[in-house]
Length: 490
Image (cartoon, rainbow, N blue to C red; front, side, top):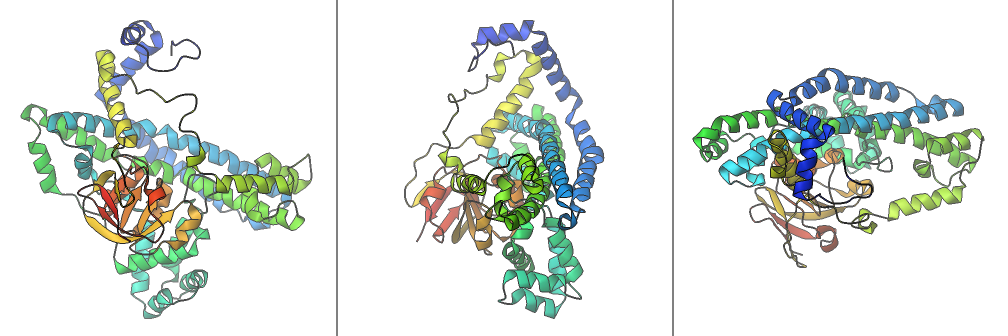
């Protein structure tokens, strides 16, 4: 805003301060920043989410989900794919519409509390444990109900404990006269939720082994979340100078109120929409594979909506099966590690909060702290046997490392495994109840993996940078939440 074309980087302090005083839009935004803090505008956003946007999103998802895509004509299916494509766009917008109300109160609390107590972000974030039920799984209630129904039936427990293939086990459980309704409700709740950010990631219903293992884990009673620790809160509050305790209490109350929005905005928007779009594309893929237009139904995920229509109806020019197969191969073999670290140049840090006029300083500081806590990782050395990152929850756990690069790897996760991955998303929630610990390459104290480790009360180390390159699938590892170290044992 106000910068010359092609400018990059933070302007010099005098320039920024001059523009802040003279540019009408900058002045308007600074007034808005002050009002946001003064009037706690995020509360209005949360109310609108709860009363308007979330119910409307759920209604929209269910309307699309109610369509039996297998019964549609080719023309109707092409129209349905168009509808799903727009639905994904709308859902992604909805997700990010709520980014600031989800993030600003957290950053505001941390910015104040760090200055008053000298505590680390990790210490302070434990005060939010138990405040985001959705982070324990978007069907946590349905999973718990299904597990309890199975527990009450000897025959259902026998089915779940059998050595049959997961698809057959799940089919028997959903048809079971006693436990069937509850298990079916769980399966339906997760069936068309993508377990990643992309339509190329499988939906949970395509991973019967993962769903069966989640039921077994829930039946065993593992994965319980930690509870609020009133004693820890009192200790932290005692570190706050008396003149700031009321402000500390106020900021903590606001972030506790808003905390669930962080994951809810994804779970009820693009994660569900992507799964429904994937369902439509896979149906198109089955038809196109039968015609020889694609080599595999899965390849249809790499078509645009316009290309699906052209290939289904024979109108216009669509890509060849070979070209689509090349797209699929490229997408499924390349990873984020293959991308350049930066586009054009390394992004500069945001301007220090004190450079802004008084009305904007608090929001600037809040967002600076939030972003640093979301992405900041330590630059500590790693070795072939010891990796260091940020400890996001206390405790020590030893278990089998399970490397997860994509949704295809979820089926290999078993109860008590240590998830080792580049990063997690809210859509990993279908496997989270099984885990004994979490280790990631990326992310800071406010990343999704850190949130769920605290919610489940399991050790977590994030931001190791090298875990997926150093740890082999099946290695025995020890995750130490007190030191922030991951030891490769064997």
